[in-house]
Length: 192
Image (tube, rainbow, N blue to C red; front, side):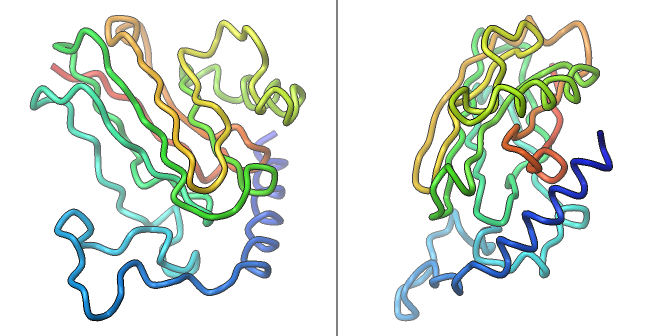
């Protein structure tokens, strides 16, 4: 299954790289970049410049009382965060997925699906079988803790989870669009 996902991922990356137009600059040259965007967003970097295996992704810090995080996805099949830290002190934790790319969900759709680590491969397989009408998520799948809608460029969706439900195992998040999960994945860590 992993080899199959790797082959599909490679094909999708190759096709996406061949069909993409050059990225537009994030801000006009005569305007300073906002402080929150001091480093270039992953979308502005070519896929060759920041391979997912080498990219140092920041952790979303919930330990300071922050009970929510925004995760960005892009047309280069990347999440900007690889570890979401959920504070036990939060009664509810929200995760907002923002697709900062421009491509439609039919060709470059992204979602964020949370599962136990050991369930992730089965959720991928069943999501592909469910197809695009089900947004690559098997309906009523009890292995899924939470899932956003499938998003196209410029769209966003928010899910809410109860941190107490994450205490009994190791959790991961990933995009279930076919071939994306091999690159677009991360961990959910419960912290004090």
